[in-house]
Amino acid sequence: MVDEHRDAPRQILLRGVIIGGALGMIARWFGYEPTKAFFLAVICGLLAAGTRILILRRKK
Image 1 (cartoon, one colour):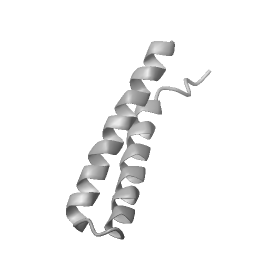
Image 2 (cartoon, rainbow, N blue to C red):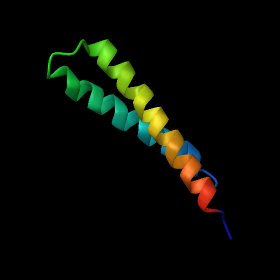
Image 3 (cartoon, rainbow, N blue to C red):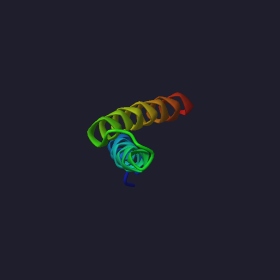
Image 4 (cartoon, one colour):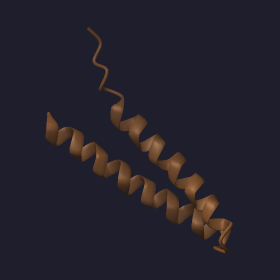
């Protein structure tokens, strides 16, 4: 049986970066500087992904 959760942390981090970057570009519509908004949103996405990984590990 293949362990489906083996790649889960990598996938969660990738989702966090993609969603964070997208939200950063949306924040640009409201007057934020593009590079600043993008990188701050990516950092927030990484922190959210890290939290999700810790929650999943604690459940096991």
